Amino acid sequence: MSKRIDVNDLNVYYGNFLAVEGVNINIDAKSVTAFIGPSGCGKSTFLRTLNRMHEVLPGARVEGEVLLDGEDLYGSGVDPVAVRSQIGMVFQRPNPFPTMSIRDNVLAGVKLNNKRISKSDADALVEKSLSGANLWNEVKDRLDKPGSGLSGGQQQRLCIARAIAVAPQVILMDEPCSALDPISTLAIEDLIEELKTEYTVVIVTHNMQQAARVSDKTAFFNIAGTGKPGKLIEYNDTTAIFNNPVEKATEDYVSGRFG
Amino acid sequence: MSNTLTAGGSKGRTGDKVFSGLALFAGCLILFVLFCVAAFLLWQALPTFSADPADITGGEGFFSYILPIVIGTLIAAAIALLIATPVGVGVALFISHFAPRRLAQGLGYVVDLLAAIPSVVYGAWGMTVLAPALVPVYEWLAENAGWIPIFEGPASQTGKTMLTAGIVLSVMILPIITSLSREIFLQTPKLHEEAALAMGATRWEMIRMAVFPFARPGVISAVMLGLGRALGETMAVAMVLSGGALMASLIKSGNQTIAAEIALNFPEAFGLRLAELIAAGLVLFLITLAVNMVARWIISRHKEFSGAN
Ligand SMILES: Nc1ncnc2c1ncn2[C@@H]1O[C@H](COP(=O)(O)OP(=O)(O)OP(=O)(O)O)[C@@H](O)[C@H]1O
Ligand SMILES: [Mg+2]
Image (cartoon, rainbow over all chains, first blue to last red; front, side, top):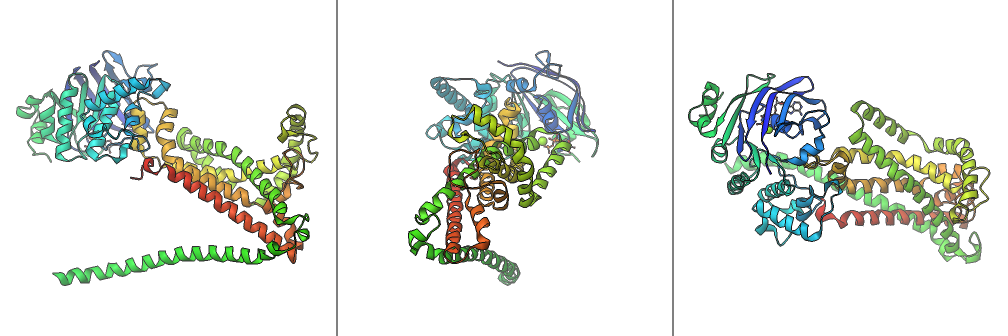
């Protein structure tokens, strides 16, 4: 149910602008990997190349390889739609579909491609996914109400439920807690801990404590200056990154002496 | 301390007051104009309702005079909407989500140009180009689909029929529906489009999940605006349709719309006839009002799920 990701010499462009340069990284299956780094260094950009969401922006393209259990996501003949259904994504701002009920939001991905699903199977899946996102008890009595009526933290967990409902191999999260209060943040961190047992999780965060708390490995990205491409500076076990980093830039950043 | 608070506040408050006053004035002005128009129509139309039914055109009272042209108006507008809605929404979607950026800009520009063409020009085009061109089509329809009442023959030899009028109207309202729908489609939150794409939706599935639900009320408003224009269009219909009694067939001469009836007869009308035509105008006004209220009702039915909360 979960696969590893290996990235080889990846360059990411917006038109002619090289945003991220020369990334090599190996992400283990069933682990949590955190991306940290200053604003604008390309964390989101790089994350979005992992499920081919980068290329939905006009002019955006990549060079290099992203291997999902050895299979190149950018190989010829690979359908980006199929890639995205295997690699789920949770965004910085909660984005449940406002016109759909909570239940329909959870089922949205499953119902794609006109897949038929019986009512009892759907009910079971909704309960399983919402429980998996620690949201079931809060919403079980109002599954038919719109998802936009939930609190921000609940909406974000609904988005996580929506992502895990399709049983993806990998879940990508781009600052999933940055719009949330500390309690909701804690709930989602607990959830990430649980997700790790079944999925490969990659999370972008600005919160150093969060990276230290939830991740097994941490990747530090940095940028030399405006207009320069972002680069992967150091990638190691989280404890190593925070306690004895190899690179000076990493040490400066994690100890708050950045800039 | 409290001094600075009150002093600083008062300046901003004048602006607030002026603006809210202006807004209130504008709102009241619209209501007042609407009220004046309605009152004028009602007052001028009154003689029709008190007149002897035998004196009304047709000789059987106002109701039997107005009913056929009300139906004719609705038929013309319905044909126009039936054609223009799918085409308009389709073109809007192509411009907003499928066409390469250059092409999209050009297309959008052309569509906006269509809206700027005066209705007389559409009328002239419909009369001299479209109507003759459609004659063979109508003949074919009469021959092969004549058993359907709306295609009953013999087909008009001039092509100046209800169907032609409806087609001309659809071309006229197409730009309204297209430009408004396009604007709305473009405003779909990227957030929701990406949510759909990120879970493996194809582009069409993304449009169904994120774009259409978001745009639905706006597209309905666009269609209603188009309908308003189709209902009220005078010149083009008057030129393209050789009117007559109400009939089911859309490919024979006949049928009439309220707006064209008024335009054609107004110049020579006086006395009771004038009151009749104004009463017809009042009816058109009421139809448009009803259509708008139905549209509002449709939009508000799904308010809870509109994403406005
Ligand atoms: N749509 C876009 N078009 C062009 N350039 C972009 C686009 N999105 C991001 N960039 C550029 O790519 C670089 C990396 O941006 P990115 O959003 O990946 O940074 P980030 O590390 O996620 O920052 P943050 O921590 O603030 O989210 C920046 O220089 C940014 O200006
Ligand atoms: Mg970012």
